[in-house]
Length: 263
Ligand SMILES: [Zn+2]
Image (cartoon, rainbow, N blue to C red):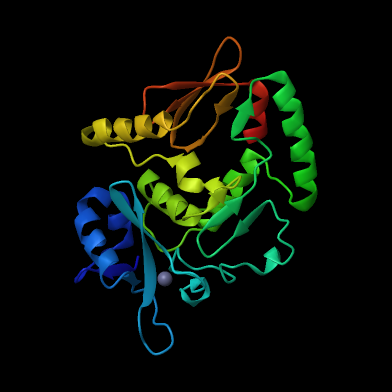
């Protein structure tokens, strides 16, 4: 476990990730000046600590890797380590379904975030999609989640003593950054739920409702979004499965095929 420093204080990264509300005021102050936090995992050239981006998510803040500095972090101890530069040497052609940019993840999914509910419009839409697919590939949702998990280095264990949804959600947010999904701002179409705490339930619900409130349906189109959350239970139902999330009381219905593919 290594520490982070901001606003004149030093604490563990896990503490910040698990308790974003407690550090919100201090992180906001550090974001204004000097504009970054510091990670004390290992000295970069010149003996200075590595900078971290302070990103705002609604009322809260999380720390993220500074662009192009991933390789300077300690690969064994630090979750901000990245093998290559964030710009990604693989994006030369610009045709990858998911690529890393300085701002964050830029993903093109093979599912549309706007579904046209009128037959004629849908046909035009699919023709456009075919043309578009020749210039850039697209990824399925499961591939997107897997890439996010890898980019957030949640497939690695470093020096952290434990990992809960606070850590997972903070790292996922950092990996997404201010990126894009199907050309839209990723923060507008992807909701990452914060860690469940009974005392914070009203805030968690308000944040979720505010997100859902931005997902519109008109007589001809219906918006879709992506929710990344902690699963509480997957139970068989009459027609497939029912998923319950840790943070909300809503239930989500999924097919047997989808559960099998995910497994
Ligand atoms: Zn580091």
